[in-house]
Length: 66
Image 1 (tube, one colour):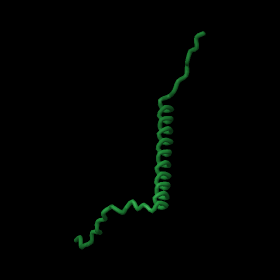
Image 2 (spheres, one colour; image 1 turned 135 degrees about the vertical axis):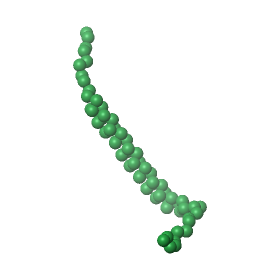
Image 3 (cartoon, rainbow, N blue to C red; image 1 turned 60 degrees about the vertical axis):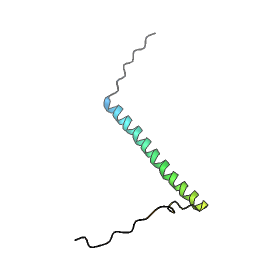
Image 4 (cartoon, one colour; image 1 turned 90 degrees about the vertical axis):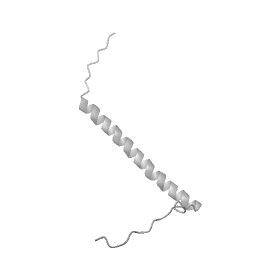
C-alpha cells in the first residue's frame, strides 16, 4: 500500500510556529528566573544571609557639572 503525502506547509506557518515556541520558551525562562530569585531571597532572609555584606559601595557623584 502506497500512501502519498500531499500536505503543504506554507513558510509563514512554520515561521509563526517557531515564533510561538520561542515565545513560550522565553516566558517560561523568565518565570523560572523570577521565582528562583524570590525563593532565594526568602531562604537568605530565613538563614540571615546578607548578599551585600562583602560588596563595596561607591559614593554618589555630586558636584557642579556646568
